[in-house]
Length: 485
Image (cartoon, one colour):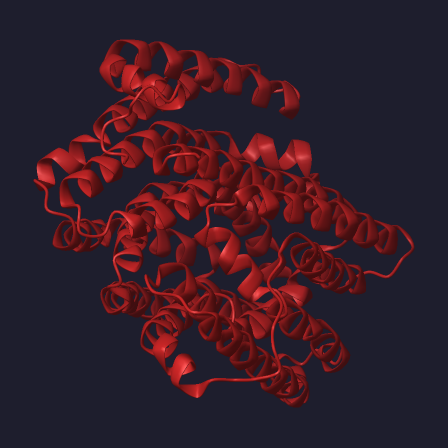
């Protein structure tokens, strides 16, 4: 019988494996699709994604996360959650079909009339496996989720690329998304023993709703935060500008997802089990903050300083407009880590209302920036977003401090090594780039910069962060990392 610590470590490994496979394979598939499709086609489907994501916020987190977080879980909770989700998904699917015409008129894109109804199938398909996924997360069985992820992405990627090569254009993106949801649902039903019964206990459904309602509210605000910008860019700057912006966001999201999503998923389940143990909760938070920043900060900073060569090498000259956008947006990975820590710790402790308040503040700031800076073009808007994210860091730290008893200075110290090492690395890379021949091929410039950055960062960490690295080594080796039960 595995201890909780062993289960948590195994869960973290498989959560990271699932996350890395999803993000990496999806990014590779997107790279190939971006080579085939035009920026306007990518931008057009980004509008479809805004509509579908707006519907999915009611399904993806509320009920499922309430099941993961709830201490006393009965079979009727699962059954009620499944049927509430199914009813909602059908209602939202119909709403997406009804809204297709108005959205097509609003964006002056007739293709949306047919694209949105077809793409809305993912809403119903995705809700079929919400409970199975929640149960696997609750038991820290991320291995089954990893199997689901790899199989669904590989099959859907094959479908999408085949359609793109056959000339289906933007429809290849719809085919890719629908296939991914369908295969994922089938795998989760195969891996899970739980099956719904033909009954719905409204009292048990009501048990899930308080937590779920706060999470749905938070996810609605996250939708505004992450999709409202695309809506306005598509509406006022057009599909081409939206395609350029979407490419930069896709790269950034993939990097962030590969670096942190797996850890965040495993951390949520672990933090939930540490409720009522403040010392262990604080130590676990500090360990995760150190580990995430040591891995994440240099990647985001490195992405910022190498963005032009990366875009030109991987995506080609037709996407050069994304380089400056990515260079600025990549720096948002730093405040994103603070936000993720605050969000995970509040949600896992049952304080979803605090997460809602924090998200509302962040969204309010972003909407204000959006309304002010859209008129000055895409670059000015993205620069304003980045500055706004850094302004939010004190709020993220405050929320974390309010949930976990700790000294704020000690928490901030967890990030110091990564910040110092990333700054040294960036200075070295920029110095090398400045002295490279102007006519040097983009891929060679990128390779040289990546090698220099990796070597300089490793050496700086060996000097600056030796105690932290020893602690990380002990954690990976499972030799009794402090703070984990």
